[in-house]
Image (cartoon, helix red, strand yellow):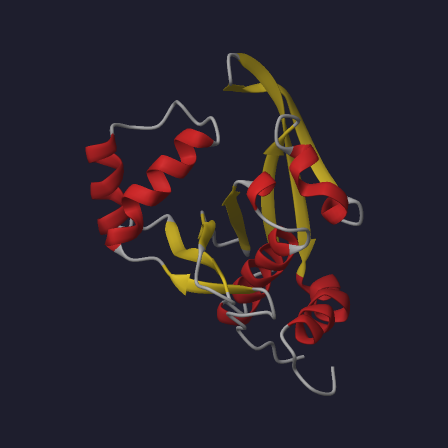
Length: 185
């Protein structure tokens, strides 16, 4: 199956993040509770220079009015055919389904742009797990590292989820095609 690197659904648009988006991204990460960030100056410099481990960063916007909803990233692409997705949104500020659509766009983009990818991973803690709602119910958990991440004053288990290319092509890409308004999907 040939995948199309969709950047929009009916609700959400991904736009390549620019250096000017760095401050908004940093402030969002602080609001989400990631207080182990580097200094703002160091973060902005890194955001502008895009380290080799960071394959792509997108601003996530509401299609109807361009409102910035958050950021998505694709990083840590390796020779084994894996890449990691990061989704950073204040879910309590967005309507239902927006986060799932953004995640689907990111996963699909990774598989469409890098045909050698076999799996797309995303990591979360129990602190963030409820924010995903039912989006993770059908996604296999590949591993958990007990008490691995210090966040909001305590240690949390870190959970690894993965979507394989075959499963994405059979199910995910078709669903995303419908959400993106592609006829015949």
